[in-house]
Amino acid sequence: MLETRNLSAGYGAITVLWDVNLKFRAGALTSIVGPNGAGKTTLLRALTGLVPHTGEILLDGAPLKGKTWDLAAQGLVMVPEGRLVFRDMTVEENLFLGAYPARCRGDLSANLERMYSFFPRLKERRAQLAGSLSGGEAQMVAMGRGLMAKPRILLIDEPSLGLAPVIVNEVFEIIRRLKEEGTTIVLIEQNTRIALSVADDVHLIRSGKVVMSEPAAGIDLDRLHDLYFAREGAAA
Image (cartoon, rainbow, N blue to C red; front, side, top):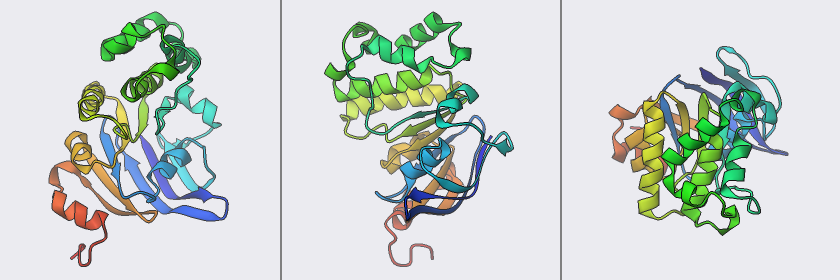
């Protein structure tokens, strides 16, 4: 469904990703893991047109077209790192913004209730300003806003970052539920154990290059950590 061919991307004169070739299977959850600075977030930003890139990005076999703001209408949606919410708007107003694509507006009320079934806490706080929420609640708003766009492909960047373990578990239960419903998910996650626990496929990026691509079920965690930290002889 989604594929990159010889994708390179970066910021100004600095190249962060080098000739990345990846395939994200339809209906599968793909976890992208790697150390800080490896290029994981840059990959998602390249997929959504937020950073310049060379190479190809293909959606359903055809080059991905349109500006960043056009991609949600094609079903490609990103939940960014850092729980970016509109702080001076209410929880419900933030969620409404996710339904901006025209194809999502006809069943807005039903979709909103679906979000509240995922995140009951947000229904309790629907009239509360997003800037007054806890970190976990803000993450739920960010995810709910992305889901309001009814994505075919959902890109999620570091959903566990800075959250208490109990909230992490709640967030990943939602991710598992979305996977079971058939949503194609690309997940950036530094917690390798939890990333593997939900993944169908795993790609390890280090220093801007893909150094491992394997089905999650066959990955040895110790070997993954050796490759992750570039330990001497890890590839032997």
